Structures are given as structure tokens and as C-alpha cells.
Image (tube, rainbow, N blue to C red; front, side, top):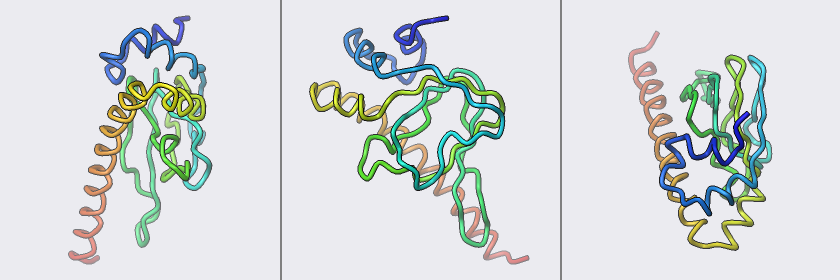
Length: 156
């Protein structure tokens, strides 16, 4: 089995991260697995990790009034799940559920926040990377909202 530092090196999200920063990141990681239909996290729960999906598929779901649970996005191998660990109040803003057997690297949020505080350049690099995820998820949510609005205008 590959060491976490080697895994970090293999994925696009971490491309360009210096070996020193890869080492800092790897020190906060551990391998995890989720069974089909197992929740990885639930909206409102404490956000204390983020995940690098190694194998499998995960749905990111939100509750929308008059529509129920809506899948905002489905992510898979090589993608990163979770950004709420980085910003107070450190609570999840959505649900995430494994659709199939999913293996991931879980990175401890407190460990990473401490390392970001200790090394501002590392912290800035991490925040820039996660800003891209936040933008992508915001755009996916906006598309879902437009779809809901379109359905409401058309009627039953």
C-alpha cells in the first residue's frame, strides 16, 4: 500500500505542492473506507476532516424546500471532498454519502489548521486550493437552484 505522501503526489489537486508541504499534509492523513450508502458526513455536524477520494463515488446532497434532498454533485477518484473544516464554525453545509465502496484519505482539519497557522505560506497555498473547490460547489448549487426555479415557473 502506498504511503500517504506518495498518494498526495499522484493527484492533480496537490500538483505543485512542494515536497516540504506534501510532508506537512501527509502528517495529518489516514486511510479510510466507506461502505455503499454510508454517510461520510451530515449537514450541521462538526466538520473536522476533508477527504481525497481514491476509489469510489460520493454524492454531495442538500435539502431544498419543496424539492427534498437534491444531489448537487457526484464526485469520484482523485477529487477532494469537504471544505468546511477550514472555516468557522467548522460545520458541514451538506451531506456526503458513499454511493459504492469508497476508499479515501481523510485529513484531520485541526492538524492542518495548526500547520497552516504555523506556516503562513503553507496556509495560503491550502486556502487557494480549497477556494477552487468552494467556487466549483457554489456553481453546482446555483445550477441546481436555477433548475428548481425553472420547474416552479413551468408548474406541474
